[in-house]
Amino acid sequence: MNIHYQVYSLSLALCVFSLLFIPFSPLISFSLSIFTLLVTSKHLISYLRQCLIINSMISMIFIVASRSYIDELNHDLGHYYLVYQGLSRGYYSEIFGFGGGLEIGWPLVFLGVSKIFPVLNAIDVAIINTSLCMVLLYLWINKYAIKIVNYRDAGVVAALIILFASVQTFGYLQRQALATVILLFAISTSGFKSVALIIVATIFHLTSLPIGVLFLCIKKWSHKIKIQHVIITLGIIILIKFNFVFIINYLALIGDGLPGSNKLNFYLINASEFALTSKRFAILIFPMIVSLLLLWNRIPKSHFKIIAIFSCLSYMAFLGIPLGPERVNFILLFIYGFFVYMYIYSFFPHITMFFIMIYGVFFIAEKLNFFGTAMDPFWSRYPYISYEPFYFLY
Image 1 (cartoon, one colour):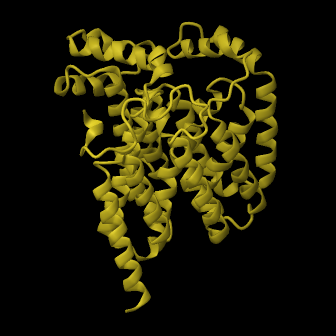
Image 2: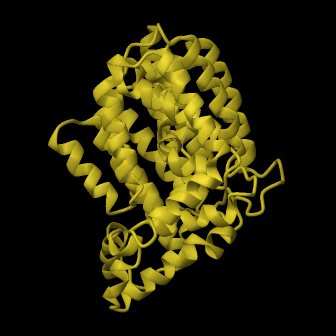
């Protein structure tokens, strides 16, 4: 029996086990799926890989859905739910309730959802938005990410994207989450499609327009950008950080009354606070920056390379501003794992895999609440394992 057949048999067995476990424990099912994608990627045939990707995404949705959504319900999610309730009751003026009436994308989507599911609760709305983001991310992985990388590593890149995706934010910052995954498609295609997708993303969240235009400019001139430009950009970003309050006040003054200018009020109120939305990403961003800078000349030129370095540097520069790094660099919350594969794993596969396994252990420990620091721990609404099939649906 040759080694290829043995590994194929192992991957098939692990795939079957991961599928069998999902009714009884999303966490175990997720762990098995990600482990199989990482370890047996070179031997996975297409249908097995697709089963594992879908299974890991579904499992992740139910892991995140196990929380009580305490903070979300007191902030954005509570507002989204009121809009959903209005739409389900026929108050169609709610369609124009975001972004000065221009951000109609999310209300139109949930108007459709309300016709199918008219009596959802607030957490259901968050779960549906998360699920929509995951479906779009799944399509992007298969249409673009897997086509860019070495085909034998398709399972690895899919696993890394899912493992590092900040799925909890997809049900919280709902409009921006949907807008960002649409922007992923915009920067992965070209011509009229890119422009059309940026327009679609903009009706979900107005910040998509400047960010989308920036990404298109990066895509156009990425082959001309050198390390010196990166250093200059970092300097400019740091200057913006130290003058952030002044800049926001100025923009609020000159943009008063314009669509989207109300978004600046959040920063006017909270700019003086130092807050870390995600300690995890605050830590993860540094190895990516170091790798990109040290390997700059070895990494092939591409717009994803420039987007990665810009996103990481601006994320680092805006650390401490409440939701600042995430709102500017939401793309990292979707495809940080893709950048890990492209700019770390591709050069140091064995070392990177070792640290990914360690990260995986911490990931599971966090999801099991071993650290005990979360205000809204996982498995608040149902346990992580049960003998009753699909217990988490009740």
